[in-house]
Image 1 (tube, rainbow, N blue to C red):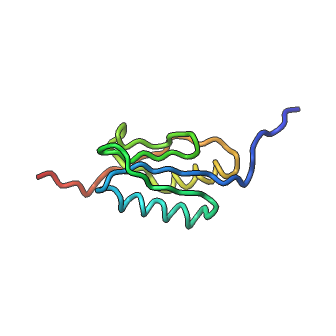
Image 2: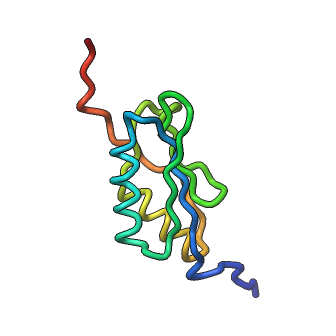
Image 3: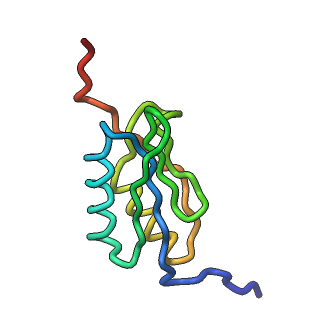
Length: 103
């Protein structure tokens, strides 16, 4: 008989590294997370050029540098809930960037 090693109701830490032009998305995602998982600690930090990296605790779940897209917010929230409940977190799906204008 195996014992569960999950720590339910943890306080997950979410770090979002971004740059100035993606700050609105960072604040929006942080707001969604805080609304749906109030016990989560969410931090927006300045990252590398072109970045929008989302890390939950010690796991990188999204990298705009690798995917060239923003994360699906619902998938991030699901992962934050999983971290809170002591369950594993996984890479999240991307939502395509649709409002980019090349000049």
